[in-house]
Image (tube, rainbow, N blue to C red; front, side, top):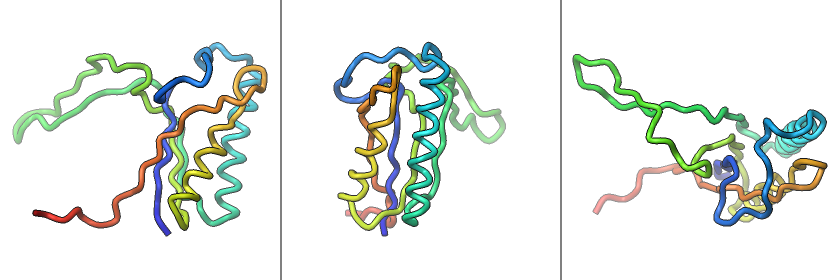
Amino acid sequence: MTKYLLLKHYRGGPVPHRPVPPMDQWEPEDLEAHIAFQRHVCELLEENGEFVDAQALTPTRTWVRYGGPDAAPVTTDGPLPETSDLIAGWFMIDVDSYERALEVAAYASSEPGPGGTPLYEWIDVHEVMTEMPPQD
């Protein structure tokens, strides 16, 4: 089995499928349906033994780097990223093949948005590295 990280971006992807307002502008019932679908995906993955983790993230973030042996970490909240660069959340899955990872990502992409219309959002699929890359 191979682990994959399926990233969801705030209105991100190569080309938006359709314009969708930010979630804080959705009707409460639309937001509830969206979250219920996310839970449904997790339940299906658990039933199949493919679930590792899933989380949602707020759009707020802080950049941090090592400040030196006698210094505090250096942090900043800028430069401001493009909206598409913000990660909204993820699914970590453990599946038999790349093709299965794509199937899961495609299904997760069909989550409902405003008015119950599927979002068909882009899902960013990354294989988790299991061994160190070869050194030349």
